[in-house]
Length: 297
Image 1: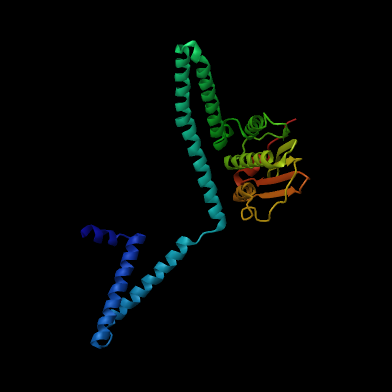
Image 2: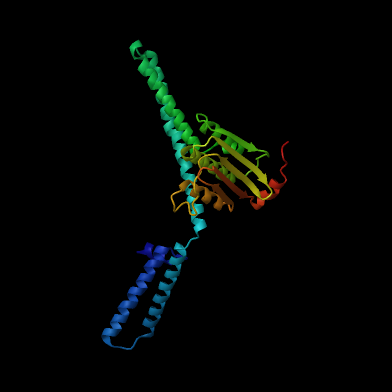
């Protein structure tokens, strides 16, 4: 009892305690009003004050409830992207640290067994070792896609080049990555967004475009970081609202660029290829550093 009174006495009260207090006032006010009505006596001043207090508490609770559920679409998009990146990082760690270690242990154990197997079972053991090696490689690739650790260590240009090399290695697509300026000092959130947009664009191209040539161009401009992705595939009709019309990849690109206050332009027609232009504006703290960066010759 003392603990509950003490929790009610704290200020500002928690939302749960405020609701309980409001409910108590309303209950007392209702019971008092019923009692006055049944006894047919004049309304006491204390009961009038209680009614006013209960009404005031209900009004305050209503205002607090409206504030608690009121949000801006941009804030929601930012939060969703943040949650997605955190979940990607968590899954990447689990794949790399847990499943990767288990597969490595299984690979070592199978190699140990292979050395002790009779000759007639060597073929099956070799197939098992190869399967485990391929599975471990796939797990590491997925982990790298979910969380491109090389962005921090290697930078944006090297990360994009490594991704394009790995993703397009066994395809017939001819690609080039054009970076005519140094891309050092790019803010982390901007580098991640540029990498994810390129990642999504390349995935869409491989799935749907049937393209033969791909050009990715990243430039430092006075107004921001420019990203251009062009292919000569079969193209498509860009939707006005990609998320509502099922173009989830394009919707994800738009959300990422909007989160950083940038612009995204998609130009495509059936049979005419696709061109994606993204511009990430410099943050105020990075504007001076970006504008003074010298062009490499």
